[in-house]
Image (cartoon, rainbow, N blue to C red):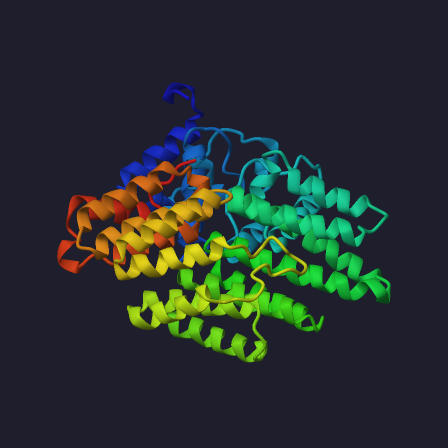
Length: 450
């Protein structure tokens, strides 16, 4: 949109920002600070950044954020926005703003519901915010809203086969789609399983609890990929409680294995991850199982990140040499597969600089992987190995290229965190190199535009 085509208020927003010497990311932090968010997450700042660009382009009116702009700039609202705004955007509800400021969800605000009643709009927004849905759903396809409406209208509960299919669908979404899309789809089914549990017959209640545990675990998975760690940790806990209520040892171990593994991506410090592994192994007993072996693989990765390469190699060997059934059947039979072994080996060998071994394992992962998540991370292992072998510049350039190839929606926290692992491996005296600085900028996420 040309500058002359934009509304006067959109031009004014950009001019006032530039007058103060603020870039769009600075503006995002200033607006969040005005509503009381002093240390926003990177994903929240990134989302606000994208919305600021839309507002300045005149694509949609700031609505609830208009008075925040006025307060941030120190300009009266009627002076900053002299034009009559769209009817819906005149309804500035402080409670909405407070809720959005406190919730660990996206803060993108487009023109909201076209309801004629303030209270209806407020309640709908608060419900979706409490569930973790982005308010952007109002201005896009509204698919999460449609699914919630369909849920309210359904009279028949889902049968168990349908629930098992639902779990497979969500796992596929997590591996192949943007993490925010996977999260929003999970929310709808978490609400549905809760409703069905209230009316379930005793012979189905236990299996539905198993489904609820698996859904909770997948939701923690999605939140981790979005970098929403506080929420993810709560959902790991919910998943464990739900699993423990079923007396299904495989399910109990699965939730604990996943919690420990995802903790490696900056969600927990490494000693805490190892403690989680120790506790899960205590719950596993002495009988060999694929999930017990998987805990050993997670231990190998944690030790490798700590630089304890001999111990990591020993744990990796134990993981590889597991002779039992590697297909962890149960409520999610496709969650565990042989790629976990090769991915773990790629990680451990790359951290130690064992280039030939890392190359072999990486190629095995790339030949078998589904979706973009594993593929991006295992390629970053190659860059990490290059750095460990002494090639700080080439390794940083390689990691930068891998990340830059990904669409912004696919640059999940877990992928960016692997990029940061590459960065941390670079000696301090070499971090002023242009390639290293570029990687540092890229892994901060400040460049992202969608």
